[in-house]
Amino acid sequence: MSRLIIQNGRVIDPANNIDKITNVYIDRKKIIAVANNCNGFEADKIIDASELIVIPGIIDLSARLREPGLEYKADIASETVAAARAGITTLCVPPDTDPVIDEPAVVELIHRKVENSGHANVVALGALTAGLKGELLSEMAALKEAGCVGMSNARYPIHNSLVLRRAFEYAATHGITVFIEADDPWLSNKGCAHEGAVSTRLGLPPIPYSAETSSIAHYLELIADTNVRAHFCRLSTARSVEMIHQAQKTGLKITADVAAHQLHLTEMDISSFNSQCHVLPPLRNQRDRDALCTGVNQNILSAICSDHQPHELDAKQAPFAATEPGMSTLETLLPLTLKLVHNNQLDLTTAIAKLTCEPATILGIDKGTLGENKTADICIIDPAVEWTMDAEKLTSRGKNTAFHGWNFNGKVSHTLINGKIIYKNK
Image (tube, rainbow, N blue to C red; front, side, top):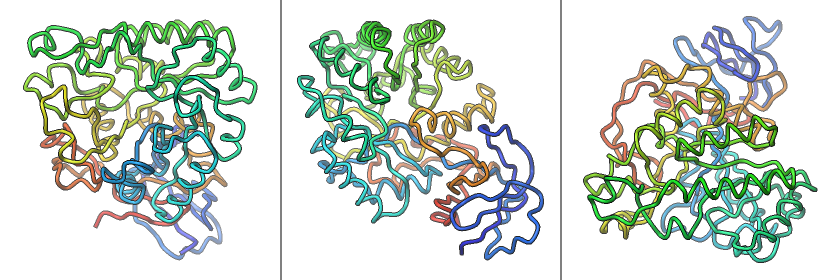
């Protein structure tokens, strides 16, 4: 079925300022028109999207698929299927796999596994330093040539500021975006909860605000010094939002994102030692959560991501501090974002932009839009569906979610990649 019409849907394409009831015409993987009519077009299949919302395929800036290296938790095949069910058509993988993504062969392995799965596009971040050890620069140019869309050292520190400065200079020379997870390892000191009344009462090792903010300040000085393009990943504090905003106003080429769960949960959610809420950076207080929502609204934070980290059951069955951090969040990225809209915290067009065209711009990929001659990666949503999250029914192999039992409005009806229907909610 190479010729397809998505008919009578509410098409929302923030990249092209489109929000109207119309049709989408697809021919051989490409969108050829978004219009009421396309003269002479004969479709092999018609999708009736009446009462549905048609948006570009969702782009997730951070999803750990656990392959290569941790296949006992999940793998590319299982997690890309979960992504398809969630309307996510492109996933970005951080470099902290095993082996680390610090040479082209690892990138090629991931691409080959993705091609065999066929359920999502996957792009990778290369390691900023060899082995993520923070000592020697990686072969960034070769990694970019192999398809890496940026470089990152994940949460691994680079202790030597000269090495970090040289890495930024190298990246700037080659037009590479550096993705930064801001954390001072001496201040975070293997903590597991936000430093505050809750962590004190529970006796949990704390992580202060300054673990994130002091690291951001350090990075910002080197970014200004080298003029590298940088993206700050998964901010968690109100002060971090302020710092990024001030730096943006000075003209630095920086963007930032937030994980969807940080816009809903706070430190209060760990009060019963709920290990499903053990994440890094930790859940902060209500003021921080509200500031993050404001940052999204004001476009200080350009994107909302899943920060998907699937775990096996045993990883979360231990005393809170001994459990592994992270949530399985591919299948809650869209529902949690739509919940912000439902609660009047975000308008629908802005919400869709944070999941589509904005992350595409950050990654420098030609996606996230329903423009003419663009690849037909599309998500169709039924906004009328009301449903309850059941952790055991997650498609991801990771069932570790803090949102079991939550009620949501809106569910993915169809997901298309390259004009092909890869998921349909029966």
